[in-house]
Amino acid sequence: MPNIAHIDSMLRMARQTLAERERERETQPDSFAWQCAVESAQMHVDELTRQLVDAKKQREIELVEIRLTGKLARFGSLPMSVLGRISTAFEEVLVQAGRTLRQQETVEAIRSLFDVRLKAVAPGSTRLFITLQTNPDLFGDSLAETCLTHTFNLLKVETPVEAQTQVRKVGRKGTQQLSKLLKVLDENYLEAHVNWQSPTDKFFTWEGKLGRIRELSQTFDRIVANEPEEVAVEGTVYTESIRKRFEVQDASGFIYGGSVPDSLMNSLTALRVGEPCRAILLETIHENPTTGQQQKLYQLKYIAPLPAQSTLQPTQLSLF
Image (cartoon, rainbow, N blue to C red; front, side, top):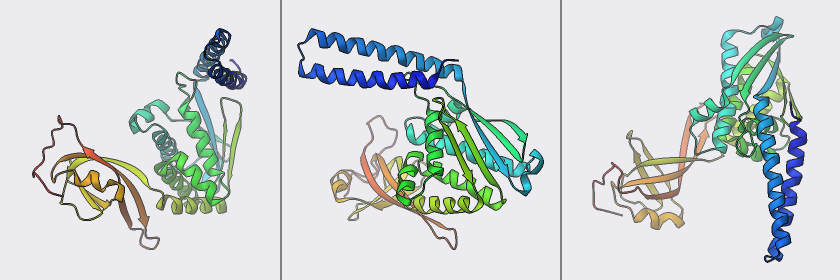
């Protein structure tokens, strides 16, 4: 199999050379020599990109080992209920992280792209081997590789600032699933040692001791509670405008309501009650640690009328 790490290193250098030659050409736009140099560098980048794509296609899968230790994980076995919760949460971490990076694609499309599978359960405490498809794109980038890298980086955070940065890369829903996975381990007194070797031969590992597992789960829950997520809504304007408030009703009848920044008041008041619209909202979830009850708060980020072909029809001519 081709050495992916070597090809990747060469491609990075080739892209840097191309960028340098493009900058030189900008200073001498009429230079035939620099034009040829740029074209030559571009051809080299294209060839190395093709080699990287082919090499990652030959790799086919990413293999992650999760070694569990604890009373429940002796002799290479695990209760099915616990195994199901761990494997489901792990898959959802990656799928939701992928959805964060590719918001134009559906969750099911990303799930199909990854095709996450439990390949084997082996003895030695209990060792789970999980695979997902590498599937490089036209530039040699693998979404699976990126999501695994972000997940390991999130597990290894040391400070709140670092945690917030990594949470944004995995996304709120991905982080919620990771916290759920950690809670399953904590509830069942299971420690975890997770390993993965990336296509570029970088070795990722995480040692999850019980104290660290609980600490991370609590940290993620606190950050997620204050980390807004974008929600796209299509529906109709529901009520007349109340200063710095909005209400939009979707096709199911659910009414989203919340605050409006001053910069969007003109966009909101230009719409009529009952008029079809598309809105992007920032959703923040606050959870009561005592009762477990959640409260969702929304702030308007964008709102505009839907195109004329929409089947939604306004019910009033006015009135903001």
